[in-house]
Image (spheres, helix red, strand yellow):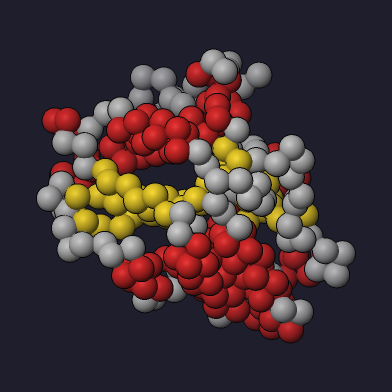
Length: 263
């Protein structure tokens, strides 16, 4: 696969993986390509932990599912990210960002416009939507043959200092290398983010992974081989739209949008 094609095909995997273990050869290749990312003064601040042990994966899955249920039950998730929720193709075509909830059970479709109201939250809780989503999330993480913890060296990652920006920039470059490689290798990848949403749960994962004081756990991803056909969860979303160049590219100064590239 050519690089340009891999970039255009890159995506997040919302569905299940095959149960097959990720081969050692592919794990080694992913780590090599991540390690080839650019970094300030060649500092290479990233560290990675590959997790295949079933008890650890199951516990991280439990924490992820429970975190999702809690964050959606108490409304903090919807309040925090409401600006990214889209419930119609028309809105998605206009904004061209965020998440389009285009796959919902018939029972929920009439209530999507009320999701950010107290009545809507009460209704979703009564219909056990947060619990349904949390359990689906738990199954997705638990069914992953490989989890990847991404860490930064605290000697380089010092919040409040310029080095912190450099480290985060380098980590992003390393993860993009890895992400593009999954596209080439027939692997899927997804950020396991919900334990970050509930105070205390991220620290439990750090304890599970024996993260030392000199490292900071920045992210956890789930990886696995993709099945030929992916079944969408009962409640799912898509994020295939991208902003047009005129919405994010400027010419000369930030006062002049780039035109003529939107075709």
